[in-house]
Length: 491
Image 1 (cartoon, rainbow, N blue to C red):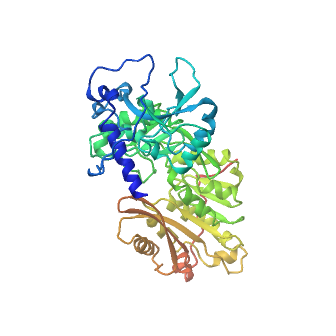
Image 2: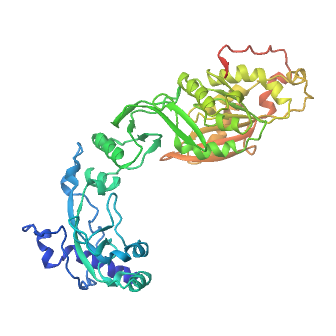
Image 3: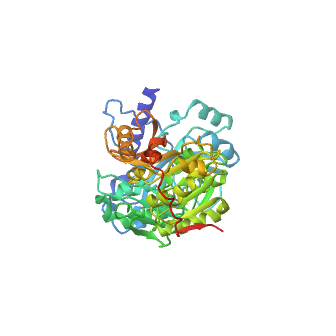
Protein backbone atom coordinates (compact mmCIF):
# COMPACT_ATOMS: atom_id res chain seq x y z
CA UNK A 1 0.00 0.00 0.00
CA UNK A 2 2.82 2.43 0.92
CA UNK A 3 4.66 1.68 -2.33
CA UNK A 4 1.47 2.42 -4.27
CA UNK A 5 0.99 5.76 -2.48
CA UNK A 6 4.59 6.77 -3.24
CA UNK A 7 4.13 5.84 -6.89
CA UNK A 8 0.94 7.92 -7.02
CA UNK A 9 2.70 10.91 -5.45
CA UNK A 10 5.50 10.80 -8.05
CA UNK A 11 2.94 10.64 -10.83
CA UNK A 12 1.27 13.76 -9.48
CA UNK A 13 4.61 15.60 -9.47
CA UNK A 14 5.38 14.43 -12.97
CA UNK A 15 1.95 15.59 -14.05
CA UNK A 16 2.67 19.18 -13.01
CA UNK A 17 6.38 19.44 -13.73
CA UNK A 18 6.43 17.49 -17.04
CA UNK A 19 3.16 18.32 -18.78
CA UNK A 20 2.31 16.79 -22.18
CA UNK A 21 3.71 18.81 -25.13
CA UNK A 22 0.29 20.08 -26.16
CA UNK A 23 0.00 21.79 -22.76
CA UNK A 24 3.57 23.03 -22.49
CA UNK A 25 2.63 26.58 -23.50
CA UNK A 26 0.41 26.85 -20.42
CA UNK A 27 3.31 26.16 -18.11
CA UNK A 28 6.16 27.85 -19.99
CA UNK A 29 4.58 31.21 -20.73
CA UNK A 30 4.18 30.62 -24.48
CA UNK A 31 1.22 31.65 -26.59
CA UNK A 32 -2.13 30.64 -25.20
CA UNK A 33 -3.83 27.67 -26.86
CA UNK A 34 -6.87 28.50 -28.91
CA UNK A 35 -9.81 26.22 -29.32
CA UNK A 36 -13.51 26.48 -30.07
CA UNK A 37 -14.09 24.68 -26.81
CA UNK A 38 -12.96 25.62 -23.31
CA UNK A 39 -10.90 22.52 -22.67
CA UNK A 40 -8.11 20.46 -24.21
CA UNK A 41 -8.43 16.70 -24.48
CA UNK A 42 -5.40 14.48 -24.86
CA UNK A 43 -5.33 10.72 -24.39
CA UNK A 44 -2.93 10.01 -21.54
CA UNK A 45 -0.28 7.39 -21.22
CA UNK A 46 1.34 6.17 -18.02
CA UNK A 47 3.65 8.86 -16.70
CA UNK A 48 7.15 7.68 -16.00
CA UNK A 49 7.59 7.14 -12.25
CA UNK A 50 10.21 9.37 -10.65
CA UNK A 51 11.26 6.69 -8.18
CA UNK A 52 14.89 7.76 -8.23
CA UNK A 53 14.08 11.24 -6.97
CA UNK A 54 13.68 12.40 -3.40
CA UNK A 55 10.05 12.92 -2.35
CA UNK A 56 9.45 16.72 -2.04
CA UNK A 57 7.90 18.02 1.16
CA UNK A 58 5.72 20.67 -0.53
CA UNK A 59 2.33 20.02 -2.09
CA UNK A 60 1.79 20.08 -5.82
CA UNK A 61 0.17 23.50 -5.82
CA UNK A 62 -3.29 22.78 -7.18
CA UNK A 63 -5.01 24.70 -4.38
CA UNK A 64 -2.53 27.57 -4.00
CA UNK A 65 -3.61 31.06 -4.94
CA UNK A 66 -1.35 33.03 -7.32
CA UNK A 67 1.81 34.30 -5.66
CA UNK A 68 0.95 37.89 -6.61
CA UNK A 69 -1.64 38.14 -3.84
CA UNK A 70 1.00 37.88 -1.09
CA UNK A 71 0.81 40.93 1.20
CA UNK A 72 -2.58 42.08 -0.09
CA UNK A 73 -4.46 44.18 2.52
CA UNK A 74 -7.39 45.32 0.36
CA UNK A 75 -9.30 42.30 -0.96
CA UNK A 76 -9.11 41.96 -4.75
CA UNK A 77 -11.11 38.85 -5.56
CA UNK A 78 -10.17 38.85 -9.26
CA UNK A 79 -6.48 38.50 -8.38
CA UNK A 80 -7.03 34.95 -7.15
CA UNK A 81 -8.04 33.58 -10.57
CA UNK A 82 -5.75 30.98 -12.13
CA UNK A 83 -5.92 28.31 -14.82
CA UNK A 84 -4.84 24.79 -13.92
CA UNK A 85 -4.98 21.41 -15.62
CA UNK A 86 -6.84 18.54 -14.00
CA UNK A 87 -7.53 14.94 -15.02
CA UNK A 88 -11.03 13.99 -16.15
CA UNK A 89 -12.81 10.81 -17.13
CA UNK A 90 -15.37 10.68 -19.97
CA UNK A 91 -18.67 9.09 -18.91
CA UNK A 92 -21.89 8.57 -20.91
CA UNK A 93 -24.78 10.71 -19.68
CA UNK A 94 -26.85 7.62 -18.94
CA UNK A 95 -24.21 6.26 -16.53
CA UNK A 96 -23.14 9.44 -14.75
CA UNK A 97 -25.58 9.22 -11.83
CA UNK A 98 -24.62 5.63 -11.06
CA UNK A 99 -20.88 6.28 -11.22
CA UNK A 100 -20.75 9.58 -9.34
CA UNK A 101 -21.20 7.78 -6.02
CA UNK A 102 -18.67 5.06 -6.84
CA UNK A 103 -16.03 7.66 -7.81
CA UNK A 104 -16.79 10.10 -5.01
CA UNK A 105 -13.42 9.59 -3.29
CA UNK A 106 -11.42 10.52 -6.38
CA UNK A 107 -13.68 13.30 -7.67
CA UNK A 108 -12.40 16.86 -7.38
CA UNK A 109 -13.93 18.65 -4.41
CA UNK A 110 -13.73 22.44 -4.48
CA UNK A 111 -16.10 25.12 -3.14
CA UNK A 112 -18.49 26.38 -5.79
CA UNK A 113 -17.17 23.96 -8.40
CA UNK A 114 -19.26 21.47 -10.37
CA UNK A 115 -17.68 18.03 -10.46
CA UNK A 116 -19.57 17.06 -13.61
CA UNK A 117 -19.38 19.28 -16.70
CA UNK A 118 -20.46 19.06 -20.33
CA UNK A 119 -17.95 17.47 -22.68
CA UNK A 120 -18.09 20.46 -25.03
CA UNK A 121 -18.50 23.15 -22.42
CA UNK A 122 -21.69 25.14 -22.12
CA UNK A 123 -21.97 25.72 -25.86
CA UNK A 124 -23.68 22.46 -26.73
CA UNK A 125 -24.97 19.25 -25.25
CA UNK A 126 -23.31 15.90 -25.99
CA UNK A 127 -23.82 12.25 -25.16
CA UNK A 128 -20.96 12.30 -22.65
CA UNK A 129 -20.10 14.16 -19.47
CA UNK A 130 -16.71 14.84 -17.91
CA UNK A 131 -16.09 14.03 -14.23
CA UNK A 132 -13.34 16.21 -12.76
CA UNK A 133 -10.82 14.10 -10.81
CA UNK A 134 -8.52 15.07 -7.97
CA UNK A 135 -4.95 15.05 -9.37
CA UNK A 136 -3.56 14.26 -5.94
CA UNK A 137 -5.40 10.94 -6.19
CA UNK A 138 -5.61 10.10 -9.88
CA UNK A 139 -3.13 10.71 -12.71
CA UNK A 140 -3.62 7.46 -14.63
CA UNK A 141 -6.09 4.61 -14.90
CA UNK A 142 -3.90 2.54 -12.56
CA UNK A 143 -4.81 4.84 -9.67
CA UNK A 144 -8.43 3.69 -9.46
CA UNK A 145 -9.15 1.31 -6.60
CA UNK A 146 -10.49 -2.18 -7.26
CA UNK A 147 -14.02 -1.05 -6.34
CA UNK A 148 -13.80 2.00 -8.61
CA UNK A 149 -12.43 -0.03 -11.50
CA UNK A 150 -15.18 -2.61 -11.05
CA UNK A 151 -17.85 0.09 -11.13
CA UNK A 152 -16.41 1.51 -14.37
CA UNK A 153 -16.31 -1.96 -15.90
CA UNK A 154 -19.94 -2.69 -15.00
CA UNK A 155 -20.97 0.62 -16.59
CA UNK A 156 -18.85 -0.22 -19.65
CA UNK A 157 -16.85 3.00 -19.25
CA UNK A 158 -13.20 3.01 -20.43
CA UNK A 159 -10.59 3.85 -17.77
CA UNK A 160 -8.95 6.43 -20.04
CA UNK A 161 -7.86 9.67 -18.33
CA UNK A 162 -7.94 12.99 -20.19
CA UNK A 163 -6.71 16.49 -19.38
CA UNK A 164 -8.95 19.51 -18.87
CA UNK A 165 -8.13 23.20 -18.46
CA UNK A 166 -9.95 24.51 -15.42
CA UNK A 167 -10.19 28.09 -14.24
CA UNK A 168 -10.14 28.39 -10.44
CA UNK A 169 -11.43 31.65 -8.98
CA UNK A 170 -11.72 33.20 -5.55
CA UNK A 171 -15.06 31.43 -5.16
CA UNK A 172 -13.32 28.03 -5.49
CA UNK A 173 -10.78 28.64 -2.73
CA UNK A 174 -11.21 27.89 0.96
CA UNK A 175 -10.73 30.45 3.72
CA UNK A 176 -7.44 29.07 4.99
CA UNK A 177 -6.06 28.79 1.42
CA UNK A 178 -6.80 32.46 0.76
CA UNK A 179 -5.35 33.66 4.05
CA UNK A 180 -2.28 31.45 3.73
CA UNK A 181 -1.63 32.99 0.32
CA UNK A 182 -2.08 36.56 1.55
CA UNK A 183 -0.40 36.65 4.96
CA UNK A 184 3.41 36.73 5.24
CA UNK A 185 4.90 33.32 4.57
CA UNK A 186 5.63 31.35 7.71
CA UNK A 187 3.20 33.34 9.87
CA UNK A 188 0.24 31.82 11.70
CA UNK A 189 -2.98 31.93 9.69
CA UNK A 190 -6.28 32.61 11.45
CA UNK A 191 -9.26 30.95 9.82
CA UNK A 192 -10.98 29.81 13.02
CA UNK A 193 -13.39 31.99 14.96
CA UNK A 194 -16.11 31.89 17.57
CA UNK A 195 -19.55 32.18 16.03
CA UNK A 196 -22.20 34.04 18.02
CA UNK A 197 -25.33 34.10 15.90
CA UNK A 198 -24.55 36.18 12.82
CA UNK A 199 -21.30 37.47 14.38
CA UNK A 200 -17.84 35.96 13.88
CA UNK A 201 -15.54 36.83 16.78
CA UNK A 202 -11.77 36.85 16.20
CA UNK A 203 -8.75 37.31 18.45
CA UNK A 204 -6.17 38.51 15.92
CA UNK A 205 -2.48 38.46 16.76
CA UNK A 206 -0.25 41.47 16.18
CA UNK A 207 1.12 40.28 12.81
CA UNK A 208 -2.43 39.69 11.56
CA UNK A 209 -3.80 43.13 12.43
CA UNK A 210 -2.76 44.85 9.15
CA UNK A 211 -4.83 42.24 7.32
CA UNK A 212 -7.85 42.47 9.64
CA UNK A 213 -10.25 44.06 7.14
CA UNK A 214 -9.36 41.52 4.47
CA UNK A 215 -9.72 38.60 6.90
CA UNK A 216 -13.14 39.90 7.90
CA UNK A 217 -14.33 40.18 4.29
CA UNK A 218 -13.14 36.66 3.50
CA UNK A 219 -15.00 35.24 6.50
CA UNK A 220 -18.22 36.99 5.45
CA UNK A 221 -17.80 35.67 1.90
CA UNK A 222 -17.06 32.09 2.90
CA UNK A 223 -19.47 31.55 5.79
CA UNK A 224 -23.20 31.71 5.03
CA UNK A 225 -25.09 33.47 7.81
CA UNK A 226 -22.09 35.50 8.99
CA UNK A 227 -22.86 39.18 8.36
CA UNK A 228 -20.52 40.79 10.90
CA UNK A 229 -16.90 40.09 11.88
CA UNK A 230 -15.38 41.64 15.00
CA UNK A 231 -11.96 41.53 16.63
CA UNK A 232 -11.42 41.86 20.37
CA UNK A 233 -9.22 44.88 21.06
CA UNK A 234 -8.67 44.44 24.81
CA UNK A 235 -9.03 41.95 27.63
CA UNK A 236 -12.35 41.17 29.27
CA UNK A 237 -13.50 43.77 31.76
CA UNK A 238 -13.70 41.83 35.04
CA UNK A 239 -16.41 44.17 36.31
CA UNK A 240 -18.99 43.70 33.57
CA UNK A 241 -17.35 40.81 31.67
CA UNK A 242 -17.46 42.51 28.29
CA UNK A 243 -14.67 43.82 26.04
CA UNK A 244 -14.01 46.48 23.44
CA UNK A 245 -14.23 45.27 19.85
CA UNK A 246 -13.59 46.52 16.34
CA UNK A 247 -15.91 45.71 13.44
CA UNK A 248 -13.70 44.34 10.65
CA UNK A 249 -16.36 43.62 8.03
CA UNK A 250 -20.10 43.52 7.51
CA UNK A 251 -22.81 45.40 9.34
CA UNK A 252 -22.55 46.89 12.81
CA UNK A 253 -25.51 45.02 14.32
CA UNK A 254 -24.37 43.62 17.66
CA UNK A 255 -27.75 42.34 18.85
CA UNK A 256 -27.74 38.66 18.05
CA UNK A 257 -29.66 35.48 18.75
CA UNK A 258 -28.13 32.08 19.49
CA UNK A 259 -29.43 28.63 20.30
CA UNK A 260 -27.66 26.59 22.97
CA UNK A 261 -28.72 23.18 24.26
CA UNK A 262 -32.23 23.73 22.97
CA UNK A 263 -32.69 27.23 24.43
CA UNK A 264 -32.76 30.62 22.70
CA UNK A 265 -30.73 33.56 23.95
CA UNK A 266 -30.73 37.13 22.67
CA UNK A 267 -28.28 39.84 23.73
CA UNK A 268 -26.05 42.70 22.62
CA UNK A 269 -22.71 40.96 22.12
CA UNK A 270 -20.79 44.21 22.53
CA UNK A 271 -22.15 44.81 26.05
CA UNK A 272 -22.39 41.38 27.71
CA UNK A 273 -20.33 38.21 28.03
CA UNK A 274 -21.10 35.14 25.94
CA UNK A 275 -18.78 32.27 25.06
CA UNK A 276 -20.12 29.56 22.71
CA UNK A 277 -17.31 27.24 23.84
CA UNK A 278 -18.98 26.85 27.24
CA UNK A 279 -22.17 25.15 26.04
CA UNK A 280 -20.92 21.72 27.13
CA UNK A 281 -20.01 23.05 30.56
CA UNK A 282 -23.41 24.67 30.99
CA UNK A 283 -25.06 21.37 30.14
CA UNK A 284 -22.74 19.41 32.46
CA UNK A 285 -23.57 21.49 35.52
CA UNK A 286 -27.30 21.83 34.83
CA UNK A 287 -27.53 18.03 34.48
CA UNK A 288 -26.64 17.80 38.19
CA UNK A 289 -29.80 19.67 39.18
CA UNK A 290 -33.07 17.94 40.01
CA UNK A 291 -36.63 19.17 39.88
CA UNK A 292 -37.35 21.22 43.00
CA UNK A 293 -33.73 22.21 43.61
CA UNK A 294 -32.89 25.85 44.30
CA UNK A 295 -30.21 27.49 42.14
CA UNK A 296 -28.47 30.64 43.35
CA UNK A 297 -26.66 31.99 40.28
CA UNK A 298 -24.29 34.66 41.60
CA UNK A 299 -22.87 35.81 38.22
CA UNK A 300 -25.74 34.86 35.92
CA UNK A 301 -24.85 36.80 32.77
CA UNK A 302 -27.65 36.52 30.23
CA UNK A 303 -28.88 33.22 31.70
CA UNK A 304 -26.97 30.19 30.30
CA UNK A 305 -27.32 28.41 33.68
CA UNK A 306 -30.48 30.08 34.98
CA UNK A 307 -32.75 29.45 31.98
CA UNK A 308 -32.13 25.70 31.53
CA UNK A 309 -32.19 25.19 35.31
CA UNK A 310 -35.62 26.83 35.49
CA UNK A 311 -36.87 24.72 32.59
CA UNK A 312 -35.64 21.66 34.52
CA UNK A 313 -38.05 22.54 37.31
CA UNK A 314 -35.67 24.37 39.64
CA UNK A 315 -36.36 27.61 41.50
CA UNK A 316 -33.71 30.14 40.46
CA UNK A 317 -32.36 33.33 41.99
CA UNK A 318 -30.17 34.88 39.28
CA UNK A 319 -27.95 37.92 39.74
CA UNK A 320 -25.60 40.01 37.61
CA UNK A 321 -23.92 43.35 38.24
CA UNK A 322 -23.87 44.41 34.58
CA UNK A 323 -27.11 46.34 33.84
CA UNK A 324 -27.08 45.11 30.25
CA UNK A 325 -26.69 41.48 31.33
CA UNK A 326 -29.52 42.01 33.82
CA UNK A 327 -31.73 43.38 31.05
CA UNK A 328 -31.04 40.46 28.68
CA UNK A 329 -31.33 37.94 31.53
CA UNK A 330 -34.92 39.04 32.11
CA UNK A 331 -35.56 39.07 28.38
CA UNK A 332 -34.25 35.52 27.93
CA UNK A 333 -36.31 34.21 30.82
CA UNK A 334 -39.41 35.55 29.10
CA UNK A 335 -38.22 34.35 25.69
CA UNK A 336 -37.89 30.79 27.01
CA UNK A 337 -41.07 31.06 29.11
CA UNK A 338 -39.42 30.42 32.48
CA UNK A 339 -39.92 33.88 33.96
CA UNK A 340 -42.22 32.50 36.70
CA UNK A 341 -39.38 30.33 38.00
CA UNK A 342 -36.64 32.98 38.04
CA UNK A 343 -36.17 35.93 40.35
CA UNK A 344 -33.56 38.36 39.05
CA UNK A 345 -31.21 40.79 40.81
CA UNK A 346 -28.86 43.52 39.59
CA UNK A 347 -26.16 43.89 42.24
CA UNK A 348 -22.62 42.99 43.23
CA UNK A 349 -22.13 39.25 43.76
CA UNK A 350 -20.91 39.60 47.33
CA UNK A 351 -23.86 41.84 48.21
CA UNK A 352 -26.18 39.32 46.57
CA UNK A 353 -24.88 36.56 48.86
CA UNK A 354 -24.84 38.69 52.00
CA UNK A 355 -28.24 40.25 51.24
CA UNK A 356 -31.15 38.48 49.53
CA UNK A 357 -29.50 35.05 49.68
CA UNK A 358 -28.73 35.38 53.36
CA UNK A 359 -32.33 36.35 54.02
CA UNK A 360 -33.79 33.34 52.17
CA UNK A 361 -31.19 30.69 52.92
CA UNK A 362 -32.46 29.54 56.35
CA UNK A 363 -35.87 28.65 54.91
CA UNK A 364 -34.28 26.99 51.90
CA UNK A 365 -31.92 24.84 53.97
CA UNK A 366 -34.69 23.72 56.30
CA UNK A 367 -36.67 22.25 53.41
CA UNK A 368 -36.13 19.16 51.29
CA UNK A 369 -34.63 20.92 48.29
CA UNK A 370 -30.91 20.84 47.46
CA UNK A 371 -29.40 24.32 47.19
CA UNK A 372 -26.71 24.98 44.54
CA UNK A 373 -24.53 28.09 44.25
CA UNK A 374 -23.17 28.69 40.73
CA UNK A 375 -20.30 31.18 40.57
CA UNK A 376 -19.21 31.56 36.97
CA UNK A 377 -16.85 34.54 36.98
CA UNK A 378 -13.49 32.79 36.46
CA UNK A 379 -11.38 35.93 36.80
CA UNK A 380 -12.70 36.75 40.30
CA UNK A 381 -15.17 34.16 41.62
CA UNK A 382 -12.69 32.40 43.92
CA UNK A 383 -12.16 35.69 45.75
CA UNK A 384 -15.92 35.95 46.41
CA UNK A 385 -15.99 32.74 48.45
CA UNK A 386 -15.21 34.75 51.59
CA UNK A 387 -18.81 36.03 51.41
CA UNK A 388 -19.91 32.66 52.84
CA UNK A 389 -17.97 33.10 56.07
CA UNK A 390 -20.29 33.48 59.07
CA UNK A 391 -23.26 33.89 56.72
CA UNK A 392 -25.89 32.31 59.02
CA UNK A 393 -26.62 31.70 62.67
CA UNK A 394 -27.78 28.18 63.71
CA UNK A 395 -30.95 29.49 65.37
CA UNK A 396 -32.22 30.88 62.07
CA UNK A 397 -32.93 27.37 60.81
CA UNK A 398 -35.09 26.52 63.84
CA UNK A 399 -36.90 29.85 63.60
CA UNK A 400 -37.97 28.87 60.08
CA UNK A 401 -39.61 25.74 61.48
CA UNK A 402 -36.82 23.31 60.59
CA UNK A 403 -35.56 20.46 62.71
CA UNK A 404 -32.03 21.78 62.83
CA UNK A 405 -30.85 19.06 60.44
CA UNK A 406 -30.11 20.86 57.21
CA UNK A 407 -28.77 20.06 53.78
CA UNK A 408 -25.69 22.16 53.37
CA UNK A 409 -25.54 23.97 50.00
CA UNK A 410 -23.33 22.82 47.14
CA UNK A 411 -20.99 25.30 45.46
CA UNK A 412 -19.76 25.26 41.84
CA UNK A 413 -17.07 27.94 41.56
CA UNK A 414 -14.96 28.76 38.50
CA UNK A 415 -11.45 30.11 38.26
CA UNK A 416 -8.53 30.56 35.89
CA UNK A 417 -5.11 29.13 36.62
CA UNK A 418 -1.71 29.60 35.00
CA UNK A 419 0.08 27.29 37.42
CA UNK A 420 1.77 24.02 36.47
CA UNK A 421 -0.79 22.18 38.61
CA UNK A 422 -4.05 24.12 38.03
CA UNK A 423 -6.13 21.72 40.11
CA UNK A 424 -3.95 22.18 43.17
CA UNK A 425 -3.86 25.94 42.54
CA UNK A 426 -7.64 26.50 42.49
CA UNK A 427 -8.17 24.31 45.57
CA UNK A 428 -5.53 26.29 47.44
CA UNK A 429 -7.08 29.63 46.47
CA UNK A 430 -10.62 28.49 47.25
CA UNK A 431 -9.47 27.26 50.67
CA UNK A 432 -7.79 30.59 51.38
CA UNK A 433 -10.94 32.56 50.53
CA UNK A 434 -13.17 30.30 52.60
CA UNK A 435 -10.76 30.15 55.51
CA UNK A 436 -11.21 26.38 55.46
CA UNK A 437 -9.07 23.63 53.95
CA UNK A 438 -10.88 21.94 51.03
CA UNK A 439 -8.19 19.43 50.13
CA UNK A 440 -9.86 16.03 49.95
CA UNK A 441 -13.33 17.57 50.35
CA UNK A 442 -13.91 18.84 46.82
CA UNK A 443 -13.79 17.83 43.18
CA UNK A 444 -12.13 19.80 40.38
CA UNK A 445 -13.13 19.75 36.72
CA UNK A 446 -10.91 21.10 33.95
CA UNK A 447 -13.37 23.04 31.78
CA UNK A 448 -11.14 24.15 28.89
CA UNK A 449 -7.78 25.50 27.87
CA UNK A 450 -8.29 29.25 27.49
CA UNK A 451 -4.81 30.17 26.26
CA UNK A 452 -1.30 28.72 26.37
CA UNK A 453 -0.62 27.90 30.04
CA UNK A 454 -4.05 29.11 31.14
CA UNK A 455 -6.82 26.73 32.20
CA UNK A 456 -10.42 27.33 33.21
CA UNK A 457 -11.30 25.14 36.20
CA UNK A 458 -14.44 24.42 38.21
CA UNK A 459 -14.08 23.46 41.88
CA UNK A 460 -17.19 21.89 43.44
CA UNK A 461 -17.78 21.24 47.13
CA UNK A 462 -20.39 21.15 49.87
CA UNK A 463 -20.18 24.38 51.85
CA UNK A 464 -18.72 23.41 55.25
CA UNK A 465 -20.88 24.22 58.27
CA UNK A 466 -17.73 25.63 59.92
CA UNK A 467 -17.69 28.29 57.19
CA UNK A 468 -21.44 28.89 56.89
CA UNK A 469 -21.97 29.39 60.65
CA UNK A 470 -18.43 30.06 61.88
CA UNK A 471 -18.27 32.23 64.94
CA UNK A 472 -22.07 32.65 64.76
CA UNK A 473 -22.36 29.17 66.22
CA UNK A 474 -21.43 30.82 69.52
CA UNK A 475 -22.90 34.27 68.93
CA UNK A 476 -26.30 34.28 67.23
CA UNK A 477 -27.41 37.84 68.01
CA UNK A 478 -26.65 39.21 64.54
CA UNK A 479 -29.79 40.83 63.01
CA UNK A 480 -31.22 39.55 59.76
CA UNK A 481 -30.20 41.29 56.55
CA UNK A 482 -32.55 43.83 54.98
CA UNK A 483 -34.25 43.12 51.70
CA UNK A 484 -32.42 44.97 48.89
CA UNK A 485 -34.41 47.38 46.74
CA UNK A 486 -32.83 46.13 43.51
CA UNK A 487 -34.58 42.76 43.58
CA UNK A 488 -37.09 42.22 40.83
CA UNK A 489 -39.58 39.40 40.37
CA UNK A 490 -40.29 38.80 36.71
CA UNK A 491 -43.86 39.18 35.58
